[in-house]
Structures are given as structure tokens and as C-alpha cells.
Image 1 (cartoon, one colour):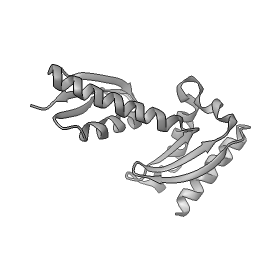
Image 2 (cartoon, rainbow, N blue to C red; image 1 turned 30 degrees about the vertical axis):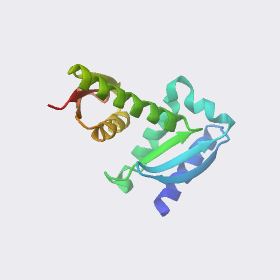
Image 3 (cartoon, helix red, strand yellow; image 1 turned 45 degrees about the vertical axis):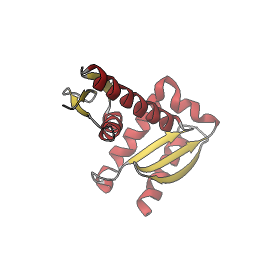
Length: 149
């Protein structure tokens, strides 16, 4: 897939321009194409909750939006930071679904960005007897997890 190669090359150029030394690799996953960055300089991208990694993700998504289309997702990860955070979000969503089912009270997660909300909605779709919906009108929204009646 030449587009994936173009994106990986673009990410490598941005990383180099930032003065960082990281190795770039591409992996296909069920969530989409994952570009993994590995190396000692990765701390620059993942400090402060991964703000720089999130910014890099946004730049890549914006730059390649037309070529990617709606269904094709690119995920930029650094030293497994996003993979671990995604697993944590999935685990929290499943916990909140259990809490919603046992208490009968809707549970809130958020505020979450669109990527994080997608992880929550996918996790809840696998949970029997639970549903989720996003509320809010800004970039960051809250997800309400409810027990299905």
C-alpha cells in the first residue's frame, strides 16, 4: 500500500525535523494502520499525557484526510504509549458498563476526543446489556454508558 509508505515517510520526516531519533514501522491492525515509533527520544512525544503524540496524529490525519477517506484510520503510536492507553480506556469502558448494569444508573466517561470515544463505543458494543452515546457539541465530548432495558 503506497499511501501507508507515504504516511510513514512523512512521519519520519516530521520526527527528524523535530530533532528526534526514532525508528518507524508500519503494522496493520483491526483498528486501522498503526505507525509505531520506537526509541529513547520517544519521551518527548509521550510526556504530558501524550500531547505531542496527539498533535502529530492530528497533523497526519489533516495532511492525508482526502487520501484516507472516512473508513481508513491511521494511528500513530510511540513506545506502546497509545496501545497501553487504548487498553486502559477499553477496560474502563467495560467496568463502567458493569457498573451501569448493576446500579441501573447511567455512567459518564469523559471528556474524550473522537479517537477515545470510538474506542469506548467499540468496547461497549461488545458488552451485552449496555449501550453508549456521546453528548456535547465540542471536539471533546462525554460518553454516557447505560444499561439496556
